[in-house]
Amino acid sequence: MDNVVKTLFVSLCFEGSYTVSDLDAFMAAGSTSVSNLILEHFNQTGLTINELVVYLYLSYWQQNHQEAPDLATIANLTQLSQADLFAVINNLIQKKAIQLTSTVNHAGQTSDHYDLSPLLIQLLGTQTAEASQPEPAQGSSLFSMVEVEFGRPLSPIEQQTIRAWLEEDHYAPEMIQLALREAVLNQAYSLRYMDRVLINWEKRHLTTPQQVQADKDRQNGL
Image 1 (cartoon, rainbow, N blue to C red):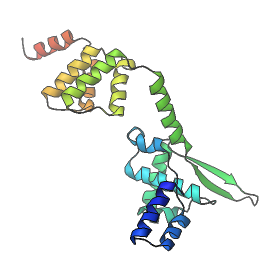
Image 2 (tube, one colour):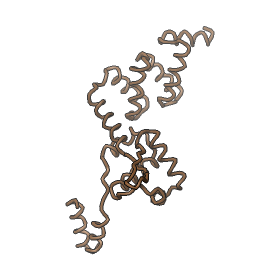
Image 3 (cartoon, rainbow, N blue to C red):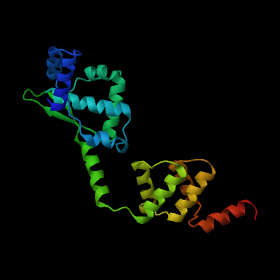
């Protein structure tokens, strides 16, 4: 048992809040290990709260049982119906957070197991990529502009969206700044709104601020 936890329990026992038998029961219950990567970077996983809870319970089962997960028991523990639990597990598989594997025992019986490593591999890859790639100056400047106008820090997913505009969609920084201005003028403080504006300009072959302004002038009859 962790020394900090043990010290806490000894203190509580001394104060009369718990007895030694309570401490024994706590120790006998055991513990489940969860990687800090999952907790510190949950906002990068794309998982819902229900999906995270089910992932943690699958991890608990894997660490404390030899047999395949009893989905009826997990459904009861998570307060989900079995149908909802199956749907959540399917979502975890589709999002590549877990992988379903089948094994055959010596009697020829097949049992299903869930490999929980794909989520950790994804998070490790994300951290490695972010650490190895210096932030482009243009990206950092745009991050700051958007954060100032939105009045809040950008999430890692929002930062990745802006990187994708620059590196994958090849939008010019001045066009992204113009889309930000459109969002602010319309009080729509979201990258989703900016993305719609950029896509609309792209479809209409408006690739410079001058072309956007000329298009507005035409619409206004100027």
